[in-house]
Amino acid sequence: MEFTSMFQFCFLASISLIFLIRYLIKFYNSSRRKLPLPPGTLGWPYIGETFQLYSQNPNVFFTSKLKRYGSIFKTHILGCPCVMISSPEAAKFVLVTRAHLFKPTYPASKERMLGKQAIFFHQGDYHAKLRKLVLRAFMPEGIRNIVPDIEAIAKDTLQSWEGRLINTFQEMKIFAFNVVLLSIFGKDEVLYREDLKRCYYILEKGYNSMPINLPGTLFNKSMKAREELAQILAKILSTRRQMKFDHNDLLGSFMGDKEGLTDEQIADNIIGVIFAARDTTASILTWILKYLGENPSVLQAVTEEQEAIMRSKKESIAENVLTWADTKKMPITSRVIQETLRVASILSFTFREAVEDVEYEGYLIPKGWKVLPLFRNIHHSPDFFPEPEKFDPSRFEVAQKPNTFMPFGNGIHSCPGNELAKLEISVILHHLTTKYRWSVVGTQNGIQYNPFPLPQDGLPIRFSLKKEATPKS
Ligand code: HEM
Image (cartoon, rainbow, N blue to C red; front, side, top):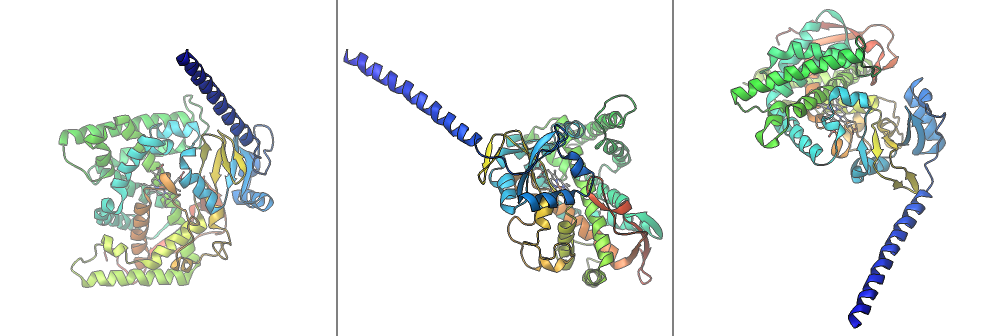
């Protein structure tokens, strides 16, 4: 009898506990739901405020919203409700401390083109594994030995411009493409370079096209080029497997036996890295040429720094070949790169999606809403960068406040290619400033968005050898 009443008591206590917990969860969730949404408007049904954002310089939209609502506001863009944030603390919350609550998100058409298994689209173990492999290839240890090869590409590129009127962005794209192929395949696959280039150029035309997969559409041509790219990559993989050599490049890192990546996963990530590396680096290089052209004293300081390195090489046995150590002796050049990354802020923002309801500073960010950390607004805030529109590399003589300078993002998805990008930019600037001169052609103040901000018409320049320089020096 005693045992039965004990049992009944335990049973009733457990049931009550379950009800109590369910009540508390319900209460907690409903009190969360009562949190207000951030201030702002959602605009028209479905189209929201897409037109206001994309019909003008996007900064006008962001600045007017920030003035009106402060550093966190809601809006509705491209069919999605969004929360935009522009304080360093909020960016850190979304990208670093609560990164697990905000997954990366891209349009489905981009996922189809780059490949669903590419690093950008993932969280968790698969993402961590890919990131380890990409970083292994692109950390200083992985790239220090390819400095002479990057230098050879830079010299060939610049020689091909001599005496010509060039579109800076288009030419920088070729340079950045050749460097990223080198970092992926080493020098081995030059054989495939032209075919890879041909397919990739068709593929990229479809990136921003309507995702209509019918014969003749840009999207359809892109998808076919993507299939061909995957076939070329399969051929390279099979040749490497037969040869059985170890390679220190990105492909070698992906092919490691322990990693167990499928050919499809490798292909998606190779195409993804090319996509991430090329237009970004080319845009920054284009802006650097523009800012150096507009700031003769800065150009002079960079040139003197680079000439000193050139002289030191002539006196040493290492002759004219740049080394990793040389690229670390370029403080002025390095500040010019940082200031260009800040002023140009080519990735004005990034996209995340809340995976559950999240509370931030008393506001509710509902599950499924997009969250956009606005890098450009942080980089252009007078609170962190006095006279923010002024190009002034000297501001980087002192360290910046935490989370105020994020040209390569922040947290687990931050850019693993940032060392390579800075390296290739430094190497080409060495030869550009010591041997060449350039002048911009036409009106110089417009900005175009494709989708990165770029000087008008890709910055057409007339390019020539300095009188005192010879191409081989
Ligand atoms: C100046 C040039 C570059 C800029 C400004 C830049 C900027 C960025 C930014 C802001 C992100 C983070 C995006 C996010 O959080 O949503 C990112 C990610 C990434 N970048 Fe770069 N990038 C540059 C060059 C490169 C290069 C040269 C490579 C490779 C060789 C590269 C490979 C990647 C990859 C693979 C990711 C995705 C990382 C992940 O999801 O874990 N980037 N980049």
